[in-house]
Length: 427
Image (cartoon, rainbow, N blue to C red; front, side):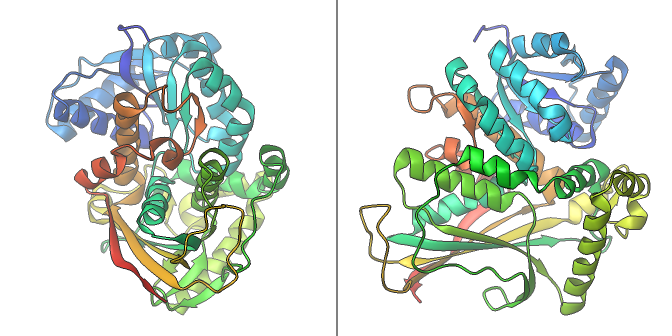
C-alpha cells in the first residue's frame, strides 16, 4: 500500500461510539511512539472538528490537527477517495445492514483493510458470502464484530480451546454485565441494529445454507442449551443469549475445521441475571419488543421513545460518563471434553466427556469502553502482525485471523483480561 495512506481512518467519528474510537486510536498512537498516523472521516467538517476538540480535552492531548476526510455512505466516490487514503478503515457507521456493505466494497476495490463493530449476524454472514472471494483476490482483510460483540467471547473461546489438552465437546459461555448505582444504558444506534436483527432473523437460515452447504460432523454427545433457568455452573439465573457472539464463535469453529482441520465443538451462550424476577421480566420484555420489531411501525415507535419501551436501558446520547466509568463485564467460559485426542477431526468419541476447564474474560464497560479498545487493538494487530504469506486476504472473524498473534496479550495490557480460572481437571 502507498506510503501516503493513513494507518487508521475512523469512519463515523462523529457517532456516539466513533468519538471514543478516536480517543483510543490517539492513545495507542502515543503508546506506539507516535509513529502511526490517523485521520477521521464523516459527512460534516464542522462536526469532525468538534469531535477532535472534545477528544483532545478527554485524553489530555491536542489532536485538533488530525487529518479530516469528508466521506458519506451515499457517495461511492467519497468512499473510494477515503479508502485510497487508508491502510485500515475503522467503520463505526451502523446499522451495518444498511450502511456496511457499501464501504466493504469500496475497501476491496481500493486496497484498504476494513474493521467494523457490528453485532448483526445477517450483515456479517452476508458479507462473508458475497465478498470473501473478492477480498482474497485483492489481498484485503475484512474483519467484522471487532467490539464487545464479539472479541471477548471469540478470543476467549479460542483461548479456552488452546488451553484444553485433548478434544473439546462443548463450550458454554455466560455473559454478565455489571453496573454501578446508575445502572446500565446503551445508545439508540445499538438498539436500532438489534431491532432490525429481530425483524429479519428469518433470513439467517437461508443465508447459512448458502454460506455453509455441508454440515459439520456431529458429536455423539449433544449439548442441549437451556432457554432459561438457574445454572449451577455460575450459580446464577441465566437466559439463552440472542446476541451475535454464538454465531461469531461458530464461524470461527467452522474456519478452523475447514482450513486447519481442527475438531469442531458445540457452543451455547447465556446472559446472567441476578434473580428469577429479573429473568421473567426480561423474557416478557423480549417477547413484547421482539413482536413490535416485526413491524416497521413498531420499530419506529421504539426508536422514537426508546427510554419508555426499554425502561431506560437505551436512550439518545447513550450512557453517562459515570455509567461508563462504573460499568464492567465478565464472561465465564466452561469447556468440556475428553483427555484423549483423536487425530481424525471427523471421528467421534463413544464415552461421555470426562474433562472440564473454566476460563474468564473481564473488562470495563462493554459498549463504549471495551468496544473501542477491542477495535483499535484488532486494527493495530492487523497492521503489525498479519502478513499475506501466512493469512491471505478475505472475510474473517477475529479469532480466525488473529489466532497466533499477540492480540490477547495486547488486550490484557489494556484491561481486558483473558485467563484460566480452573485448570483442566476430571469431571
